[in-house]
Image (cartoon, each protein chain N blue to C red):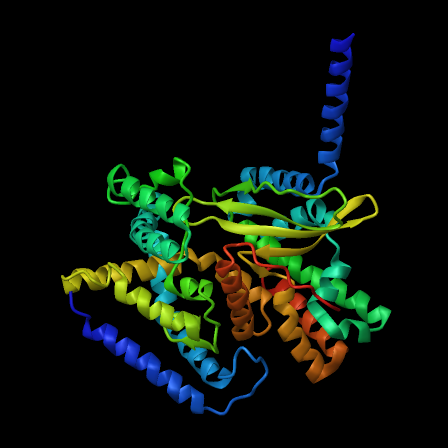
Length: 204
Length: 238
């Protein structure tokens, strides 16, 4: 009986932790990364620089886990509160397009790197965490690739991607603030949409 | 070994440039970058040099060199650098890391045939990369104004001095045979440039103002390195 009880206890704990892991931010990052890399490793088009195909992959596999509203707010900084809801929507749309392209382009330069996951102790009560991974490549120091995630409802959403300590989001703060100073929020929207159009037409 | 004239010269040039730049009137947008006017001019010089000479050479090297050779070249120079990393880890009080770096150099120089193969990484000794600028940062020396130098690129004032110390103790610059030394320096430079070729397109597409994009990324990256990849998070407002 004692044996049975402890077995039952062990099973509950095990399944409990497995369940918890699935809902944890590091498990999410690992799953999405694995899914994407499995596809990239088999796709010769993406490896030889087919950005359009890479973008499609990012849109279907990665985008659902990103919070672009928050990302855009972070990139725009203080001026965000001055934007109307319509301007915020346009800004987020254009910024999303640009970041998706940047991220997809990085994927096309994938060679034979592997990703390792740095173990992190994440408190169950935490709602804002950074999950650290490392890109390991032969002959050079591993490159850190971290994701900042926020708990929203019962899921986690990424709101920043940090490469070797450089936040892809906040690195725009300076140039965005400059543009708003010179040409206002609409000027910033225009700058982003012009860049996106130019990128789409010059190298689809 | 006596200090080479060229090294003294480069130190002199940098020191002069710092003095000259201090006198430049410039548009003062970012407090970290008071000499933006001077830096943007240097940045333009570098972009020009890169476009007409450095990048084409790096692209050629990248195209004709098989991947295992490129990895070997990177490992070879990386192994030399590892010894300097060990010293800097020691100076920063990270004895464990320093010991691991010494182990890396010993293993890679022997079993790894002069450093061409990074056997130590496969054995689980992680590669670190430390230079004197980081050591100064650990010791509490502040960044100082940001600079963009021809050929060596972005450096804060502290890291400019760090770079001079690095270059002074750099075993490659201390090779007595001058033609050999120059070839080694050139190959290392081209290999380094080639290794960042994939980033070019990303920056070209992502940045609205390439100069400030690189500056802001550099400053964030350095902060991260000085905290060994674990900087305190800055709360962001919007």
